[in-house]
Length: 302
Image (cartoon, rainbow, N blue to C red):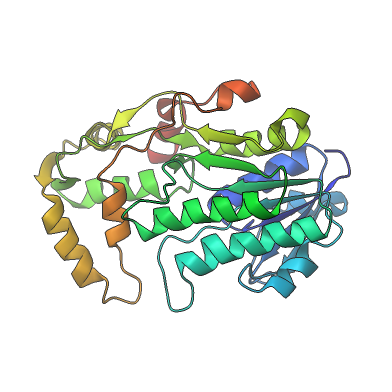
């Protein structure tokens, strides 16, 4: 990666920041394309030696997208949207935005394009979020020959949303509600391992046109993860099964809020397992040993 120019869309996000760090460590020059570059704050070391620069881009606007990636050797699209607000929709960001990045990367003759999606992407899903992820993948593959798709599972690491939110719930509530019976399976993946996978596929010629599903080394039920978090913070929380019908009613009420803490799409995701397909390429194919939840989470929850 020495002296290669890599543009990272969504570089100010949780995963994006780790991708930038990994790229800088490999000697790449990094251009971070974000909607508010003036607000983007990163460790000062990122900017040493001219390796790092933040620029304006909105993937929904193809002109700004083209300008942001001009002259790049490689492009990474790590833009994500979990809650729709106004014209920020799953279709606009995960489908049209992904198409804009891929099309302009092709026009600019970029050597490598890495598109970050998610495990469980399914064009037939009841979840608009999941459908958009799948349609976005298809759009990228259609317009950029050799695009690399990475599908990580639920991300964890210091500053994450998933485990940090569970810990806050366990601290404040004597009863922790389960989605259904809590048996849905998840395969949490360490954010640093996903960032490492990005740099690996950029450097590996055989990764062109491949799809990788990135899950951690262990699979847990949602119930087991709640129990793990409760133990870690020293609580003995009681787990309360809550039927999905109740969750859906709550999500309907919360949809009236400007920033709903719970959406119907999130509930749909919790009705099915979120684990890597055993037949898919993964960390083993990139010679990466994934990190276990127990090796990282205690350090930032404890």
